[in-house]
Image (cartoon, rainbow, N blue to C red; front, side):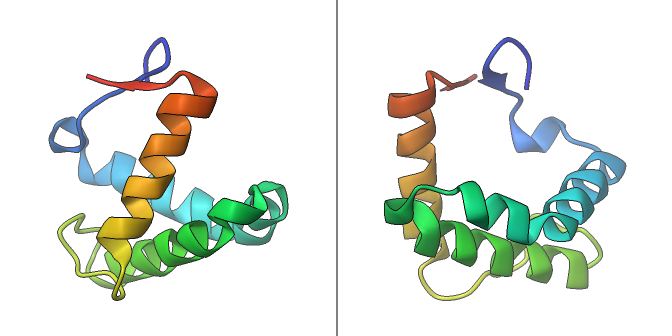
Length: 88
């Protein structure tokens, strides 16, 4: 992210993906503890997808659990509306 704008995932290196996934999974409980209740199920789904990414050798195209696309949409909408983050 640069100036509240996410860098498209096709611009990430495998090392960057691995760092993000490993950091997120190692702080799973902390992230879930601060997640707004209406987003908790979506964030839990995202964490399951990150586990699949890791299992696939940090491949962002790894299939997540059922509902991953919907969960990511909810998280993205929250980031845009509540946090002022944009996607470049």
